Structure formats: structure tokens, C-alpha cells
Length: 286
Length: 289
Image (tube, rainbow over all chains, first blue to last red; front, side, top):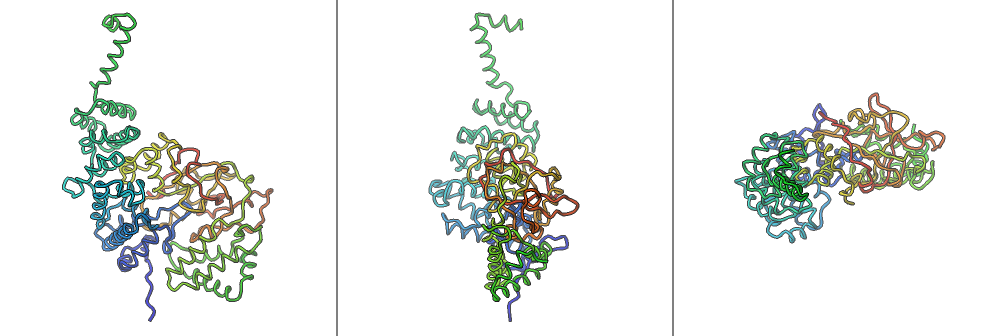
């Protein structure tokens, strides 16, 4: 007798019924995901006209079903299998690899945590070797983006030390900060190391973003309080950069008695005395 | 009624090839899924009249080759998965083979609409940095904030050759025309462009954003065909009228709008690096609330 072929089934509102994924079995799900994440899904065709992201449907499915659903567990196992296949073939990459990573950058996939912890450890231990193995810095960076979601450096996590090591590698330090920190308070705790390590051309842009998000999420008052209480020992250039970024975002500055003000006072005195005037009289008169 | 081109193309096939084509079309029309109007797909294949490759208007050879490829792939398949993959592959092999559109007949500026959050994430990283991309992916930064900040920090010089207008060939584009387009209403615009993104199943929060770029910075302008549209039944083949400069509506394709929206001009062209765009992309809006 001919074996009945599996077919996706849909709920009344047109969304995929996660139950059918569960019934499909791991083999079918692996084949389907490999195909979809390669950019060609014969069952749920990708909309080329608007560049539909191959991962978007799967992200939606996982969020909709929840991590506890058996369908999510099956998808999770299939994703791990695709990551394993990619690691075996590296530096040649199967066509599904970049979208598999993209998926892992957006939603928790429980089975992949150990895989990412392992990759992260190799990158931190021998970054150049890992980059060679994965085919370049860009791809390695994508793995770290995903690791920040799947294997974050929570206080009790096995990956915490690895993230701390990555914090000292200039090209990965910002990603390490993202992997290590769950809050602005966490970021401030690591900010001195990050500031020292981050390439100069990236620092201001990244700092600007951190403050933008922090003010949006925690509010200006909380952000200023955190900076004042934990940032007192920050180097002068970092304090100045923070003040500048806060000013640009329309916020009050954090370090009101900063050297910036002292410098501008000194510059004013210098200009006045340089012009042959007695600064104390000019300033009082003014 | 099938197009004359289809009739000629189908008639040029050998008997066995015609048989395979019939089997393929029967299979295609029998697919019964909520997101796919398979009868419309078959009707589109039969209405096709601009798939002429390098030939002139009315030349059936390229369409005949496409129909042959569809039938062949179908006859070789032993599972539903392979049958569907076979049609996808036949379409891919005949992408960007619509009748060429004269460059001078097209307006100087093109518009392209995208729903790709991966592309937004890349733009966020290029313009705002790595932390911003993490914030965008995790939802800490809203789509609206992302587009506002991209516009503030926009510098085309930060884009690399790795970022493209579309993930692959062909690039679907539209442009300003004598009619109207609801360019500030994402859902209405998606209807006008007949974007099936609204019908996606199980997807999360969908957005629509707009790129504008100069016609002369891209190449290979063509009528969109069923092969370019692949599985999208909402696509509408251009009517079987030879292009006539005096009748501007005959010079390119038109969308089959949904609801009460107006049809929009539609062409395809070859993919190009994203740095052809002349300003920061504009968020049209959210497709889902």
C-alpha cells in the first residue's frame, strides 16, 4: 500500500496548526526546515515580492505554540540538527545556515543552548582559528549574536566566563556586553572594560544606543541614578562621552561636576587672562 | 480563454510533452490549501503572454520551454514534496525572462516594498551599531524607533556590497503613476500591490517599508511573468496587448489589487546592491496589529 504523504493542516483563522507539525515527525520537520531556511519552501511558499524572511514563519510558530508545545520541541531538535550539520561542513556553509542563525537570534530554541556555549568557548579561546573555521569574522559574529539569545551570560550560566573573555576582544566586545547584560545596570558594571576595549570608531555610536534604549526602557531618572552611583570611577573621556550622548538625546547630563565643566571654566579663564584682563573682575562684572 | 501565446506554446509541444503538461496542470489545480488559490495559479499560467525571453512579443518558444519544464519536473517527481519542488525549480529557471521593457518608457524613480526584518536588522547594525541590532531583534527597540533612528544616522557609505535590494532575483518594483497609491497605509498598500504577505500563516508582526532608487542604477527591466511570481496566485499576467508607446498602460505589468484599491504598475529587474537607494528606507507601517 502506498504510504500516505504528510500534509500541513491549518486552523480556521488560516494559521498553521502546531499539532500537525507534531504529527509530521522529526525527519519531515528537518527536511522542511532545511528547505525553508534555504529560501525555498514548497509547502508554504516564500513571498519573493516583499522578500519574506524564511525564518519569520518559524519564529511566529514557536512564539504562537510556546516552548512547552511538543511541536516546538520537534522544531528545536531539528534546528540543533541543522546547526550540527553546518558545523561539520564548515567553512563550507549549507544554504540554510544563515537563516538558521537568524532564527536563533530572535527566539529561544532550548536544545541549542549547549551548542552555542561550545561554539562561544572556542571563539573566546582561539578567535582567529574559530573565524577561519567558520569562514570569516562576519559569520562568527552572527554566531555570537545568536549565542547572546541561546546561551546568555547569566550569573549562574556556564557561558558567563566565556562572555567575560570575549569582552576583552575588541571586535567582539560589544556583542559580549550584549550577551552578558540583561539590564542597563549590568552594562554599567562592565562599561569601563568595554570602553577600554571597543574600537574607537565604534564606541560613541554604541554608547549612544545603550543610553537611548536605557532611557526608553528605564526612564531618564533611573538611568541618571545608575550612572551617578556606579559611574563615579569612570575615566574622564567616558564620562564626557556619556554626557554628550545624554545631551544629544535631550536628556540631562549624568556627571554635572564633570571635568568637562572644569575644563570649560579653565578655558574661559585662560582666554580672559590671555587677553590681558583680570579674570576675577571680568567674570564678576559679567 | 488561454492567451494566444499559451495556445501556440502548448501546440508546439510533442504529444508526450502535452500529456505531461496536462498532468501537471491537473495536479496544480487540485492543491487545496487555504493560502493557495490553485485554480487561479493554473489560470495565470494559461493567461501568460509576456514570457518570451529574448524573443519579441508573441514568440512562443520561451513559454513552450517553460511549460515543458513544468511537465517534465512533475512527471519525474515521486512525492508531493518533489512535485512542488519541481514547479519551484521550473519557475526559478525562467525568472527574469519576461518581455524587456524599454528603459526610456519607464519613469526615472522606482519604488520597492519589503517586509524583511532581516534586512531592517542589517540596516540597523550598519547605521546604529551592534547593540542597536540586538535591541531591535529582542524587541527592546520598536520598529518605529528603528526607522526613525536609521533616518537620523543614515549614510549610504556604511552599506556594503553584501546588502542587496532583494534576497534573490528578480526584484519586483513599482513607481509613481497617474493613478493613486495609498503610500502611507500599509494594509491598503499591500492590497493595492496584491502582496500575499497578508495571508501568511502563523507569522508574527509584519511590517512594510519602502525603498526608492533611480531607474538608471538598476538594469534588465522586464514584464513580470508567472515564473517570476512562482506560487503567488495573486499575481496577474499583463494583458495580451503588444506594448504601444501611445498606450502607456501596455508598457509594463499591473497588479491585481485586493478590495477596492487601484491597480499599481509592476515590473521586475535584476538584483542590485542596496546602495543604489537614494535615501533611508521609509516605514509604511504595520500589516498586523
